[in-house]
Image (cartoon, rainbow, N blue to C red):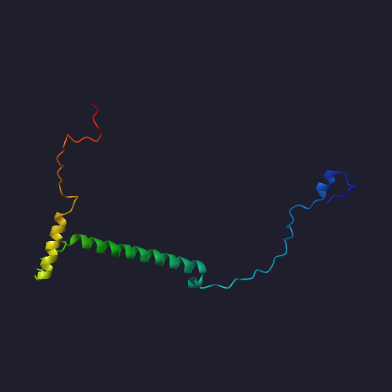
Length: 129
């Protein structure tokens, strides 16, 4: 490099060595990482778990679809209506049924009541003469 006493720049450029190989930087020794087996790598394990989960979900959805389709294809079972069993008849049951019938007939919301006859001669106020 030029010193401060040197003012001629062309002389400095002429003194520079041309086509010399530069001295390289000292190299650090590269420590070789130990080789980890493929199935013990973290990314490999996570990807295997993710792929397995997706495949299982697809299989479950497929099985569910097949089951639902088979349910829809089958004819529905016939609905049978059971005949009512006759109740035992005794005097107590007949009395209860008779009372229920009378109560149903006496229901004021179902009865049509007649308006009583009006007497038009009755007055509340005295008639002035």
